Amino acid sequence: MSMLFTRTFRALRGRSYSTVSTHRKPSFNKTFILGGALAVGTGSYFWFRSTTDPAVKSDIITPVFPVAEVMRHNTLEDCWIAIEGQVYDVSTFLRKHPGGAARIFRYAGSDATSAFRQIHTKLVLNTMKDEITYLGPLGEGQFALKETFATEPTFDVDSKPSLSHIFNLLDFESVAKRVLPQTTFTYYATGSSDEYSLRENHYSYLRVFFRPKALRNVEHVTTSTNMLGIDSELPLYISGFAGSCLAHEDAEWNLQRAAYKEKIVQMVPRQNSIEWEEFFAGVPKDQQQWAQMHFYTTQEMEDMDTYLAKFEAQPTLKAIFFNVDVADLGNREKDTKIRAQFEDLVDDLKEMANNGAARYCTTFTWDHVKKLVQKSSLPIGLKGIQRGEDVVQAAEMGVKAVVLSNHGGRQLDFSRPPLEVLAEARQMLKEKGLENDIEIYVDGGIRRGSDIVKALCLGAKGVGLGRPMLYAMAGYGEEGVVHAIKILKGEVRNNMVLLGARNISELDESFIDSSSLKFRNPTIKNRLYDTNYQDMTPPPWKD
Image (cartoon, rainbow, N blue to C red; front, side, top):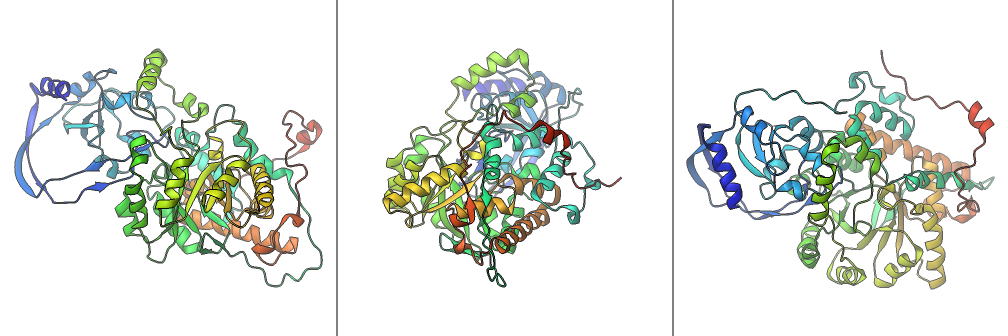
């Protein structure tokens, strides 16, 4: 603190000043879910308390920092940036930023407003005073032009296809790829290392085939179901994920409103872009949601009562899912490559990361899960389970639901696709007589209603979708998310009619042939077929 004061004092000499009248209003201690400082590259976030004093009125002298002064603070040890016309010292935070120092350092001594707006709402700045140091307003001058890198959309968003030309979820992805900045789209789309798990998540569904039952009365078909006590119009929930504000300025509002309109479940992430209190103040009282949570530190885990109380106090939340696959951050190489800027600083930045604070809690164990189950008045779920034995252990421990997931292929590459784990887990539960004690959900790679139906036939209670919802709102906001849900509902119903199933409970293994599910050999291709195959064209763009 004394070093920071000395640095700031030296910076103030010769500066201009302005007198600002401030009025600080009383408030209560608040614990917020906040975004990591200047990049969402990891989806990492911090929780901290902000305490304000009783209302006071005072005239204070605020230093004004000319652009020339800000530009001088551009080293790893002394790093300033400007955001929204305000100057911040982020020197200390560089060493603890979960996304790596380079994500911030590329704007050292410069204006980071444009990059910041792509990732965060202004609320983040108001609640980040424990992480970065506010110095004062930006003064006169012009920053030297700096290289821009994949920060603008590749096509005019006004020429994007109309929703009437969007027929499937991959159409949304093709639009998002062109309306989002390259860095943003790559962050969404990236997997881990060679992205084998990313691809296999989807390809696994292509190895399961249907066995329709003929001459069934399918005059009345319903896609409605019940998930953890919540009635849903579709066996689908919107997954919890970071970075919604990169896709659309309304961020999670799009997801919440669309889920409410279509009567499905939204999983609210810990990394919510919108302040917790503000977000839930706008949620209808009759909406039913799940919460997604993970611990960053051992201290947070030891304070689990605080977090449980926060969730239990929110009446729309009906279950809590804890991430169990984030003991470390996956090697998201594609995203890292496209953002790499400072090759001459690679060694310094790596050393910083290695010496920095732990990104995630590495001491979260089954013993803590047992405590969560005992303490919580809400059903506890585990998200990120990747083997049948762990599903059995969760059921025996009283966990009410698991999400079979490899984090969309973003964590450990060569993790098996969730659909394979589902088949394994159901068999193990049956052998133990536990198949009715726990609900199983899957996420990752789902792009068609047929994928959903296949998962249900293999024993899933429902599925989660993440990326497709981001892509839908990137191009079309709330309306896009609603359209995506309607597309899936139509596809699920169509598949059920053609299979001869009248309701979700009728879907079982008798409707599918999963004998090829475990056959994986991506090096063998039918070259003649590939040569003659004509790719499905994306929706047309306007002139």
